[in-house]
Length: 142
Image (tube, rainbow, N blue to C red; front, side, top):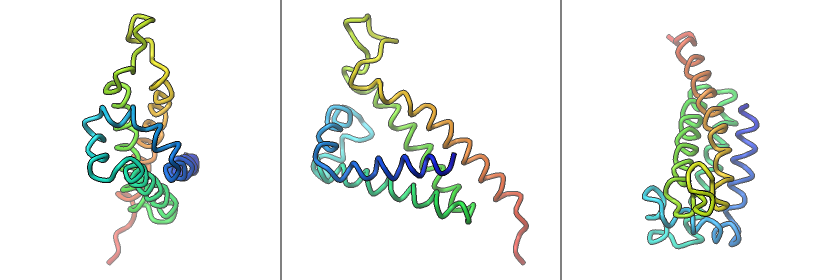
C-alpha cells in the first residue's frame, strides 16, 4: 500500500510540471474554496508547481517513513488530507454532476476520475493508522 501511494504521488507530482496538466486543473481548482486562492498567489503554472512539490514531499515522506514510522505518520496524514481535499472538487466543480442524466449521482466527465480518490483516501488512512500504532507501541528511548 505504501509503495503504491509513493508511485501515485511521484507520477502525479511529475505531471504538475507540464502546462497541459496546469491547464487541465483550471476547471477543477478555480471553483474550489480550498484551491482557488493558489491562482492569484502563484499563477496557473505556479499553482501546479506548488501541488507537484506537495505531492513529491508527501511521496518522499512515505519513502522515508518505511524506516522512520514517525515520518510516515505525518506523510500519511498529509496523504489523507490530500485525498479528502481532492474529493471536495467533485462537489465544487460546476459540472461535477451530469445535468443531462439528472445530476447526482451521475458524475460529470470533468470529475468522474476523482472518485478513485475514495480508495486512495482509505489506503492513506489505513497506512496512517498502521504507522500510528507502530509509533505508539515502539519502546521509548531512555
